[in-house]
Every structure is written in structure tokens, then in C-alpha cells.
Amino acid sequence: MTDMRRFIEHMPKAELHVHVEGTLEPELKFDLARRNAVELPYESVEEMRAAYDFDDLPSFLKAYYEGMSVLVTEQDFYDLTTAYLARAHSQTVLYAEIFFDPQAHASRGVAYDTVIRGIRRAQEEAEERLGIRTQLIMCFLRDMSADSAMATLERSLPYRDWIVGVGLDSDEKGNPPVKFRDVFARARAEGYRLTMHCDVDQENSVRHIWQTVRDIGVDRIDHGVNALEDEALCREIVERGLALTVCPVSNRCITGSLKALEVRRMLEIGMRATVNSDDPAYFQGYILENLVATQEEADLSRDQVVRLAANAFEASWLQADEKRAFSDRLAGYAASGAGP
Ligand code: HPA
Ligand code: ZN
Image (cartoon, rainbow, N blue to C red; front, side, top):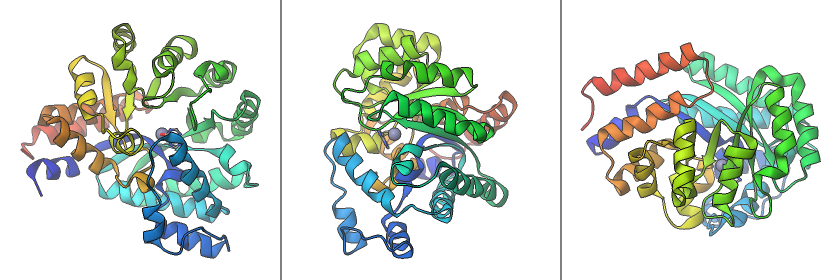
């Protein structure tokens, strides 16, 4: 193992872009399929992994939604979340903001309460047992209607204290941010923080990023790499201090490129880039593998690697005191002389 890899592994980290349903490893998928008597179109873990051969967002989403068929009971959501948190903890993730997709479960007849209660129990237990701190972000599916998103927002209100913010994911084509203007305005009024996916190399990527900034007024942007194509947009993002949650291994699976040089460019022009795993079970890379691949490909310095981690703690939706405590731990690690 290189000094740099060891340094990244033990570096205190925050993850801001991970879909809990995207952490469903093939082994657990098989176990849950057996437990719930769900038929899978694969004979083995190897066959399932081999089928994870994506070339665009829709081909990934097809596997992602198909995989969810095994998630039925509260215990399933608990097991899923517990497995991710153990894995994240093993890579020195101290804090994670985790997406979940309630509409993808409701449409299969799995109740909102079942989903969130299972996830929540895992969060509480992991915090107590492992010390890993987490918050939840509820995502709306952009290829469903704005009315469905609004109904989901209303469904979430009894759990207001368990959810820190809302996001927007699924297929971007033909589903611009402004489609959800009223939903996000209402979410803001309810006290939620706001983020939205602006997936990489989509039709109208740059226009959609402008919309998230100007029309929606997001607090953060998920992906957003194509902002680099527009200087005025970069300036606006820097001025507003908006962080971007880049997911390099996901980018490689979906676009053929890690976009690691783009991450370096963001750092160089003062954009608050962070590195995250997105759907680690499908793309086969957790946050450590994402950071290592990005560092190697873009030849990032030790300081730049620390900056990526610092950006994540600073851009998190924690209260100021907790944010400061995590940032101080990272600064202490960086100053300790560990690593290259
Ligand atoms: N983009 C869009 N939808 C998603 C993603 C993503 O990165 N991950 C899970 N659903
Ligand atoms: Zn995502």
C-alpha cells in the first residue's frame, strides 16, 4: 500500500452523496431475496456483478431500481443501512449524509414508515456502537410528477426531525430542476436544506445547473461537473460558496471518465469540490477508492486531498459546533505528519 493510500484511509472523512439503496451489495441482495422469496434474474453474485456494466444513467438506473425489489420490511432497510455504515466506518468516515428514495418503495407498496424507521434504527445504533454520525436526505424522483413529489414531501412531515434536507435524483433527461420549483420552495419553507442532482454530461447540463442556483436556490449541488464549461456559472458558484458532490467512480461507470482533472480544476479555482461514492455497491468503489483513484489520476497533492475532506465537513448540514469539531479533527490529522 502506498503512503498516500494509507494517509487517505485514515484521514477523517465526511460523505455527502451516497444513496442508501445504492449500497446494496450483491451478497446482501441475494440474502434478502431469499428471506422475502423474491426472484432475481441472476444465478450468482458473480453473474449479478457482471451485469453491472453501465454505459449511461438510464442503464444504471434500471439495475438500481431492479435491485430494490428485495427491500420489503423494516428489517431489510435496517440491514442495508447497517452494512453501509459498518463499511463507511471501516474507511474512517466520521459523518455521512445519506439519500433515500421513498417514492421508489411506495410504488412497490412499501410504506414510507417502513423505510424510514428501518434506516433510522440503523443510524441510531451505528452512532452509539461505532460513533459514526449521520443525517438523512430525502430524494424525489425527477422522472415522476411534481404532484407526486409534493405528496411525498407532505408524507415526510411527521418525520421532520429525522430528515435534514431534500434532493432530486433519477433520470434527468427532460426533467429539469424548474419542474420542481414549487416543491423545493415548500421544502425550504418547512425548514429543509436543498440539494439537487445535476448529473454529468446530460442533455442541457449547464442550463440545469443554472436553474438549481438561480431558480431553486440550492444549498449544494450533486455532481455538477459540467459547470466548468461556463465561466460565469463557476464564478456564481464560487461567490455563493456552493459545494459540489463529485462522484468519480460513478462518473467512470456512466461517462467513461473519472473527471479527476475536473476535480483538480475546481479546487484550483476555489470551487468547494468534495469526493463521494454515490452508489458504491453498483459502481464498486466506496469513498476511499474514490479518493485514491482521483488522487492518482489527477496527481493531487496531500494538501489538495485534505482540502477535499475539509470541504465536505464544511459543506455538511451539521450545526456549527459539530462542524467545527469534525474540521478540527481533520486539521489535527493533517498536522500530525501522517502520510506522504
Ligand atoms: N443520479 C441520478 N439518480 C440516481 C443516482 C445518480 O447519481 N444515484 C441513484 N439514483
Ligand atoms: Zn447520486
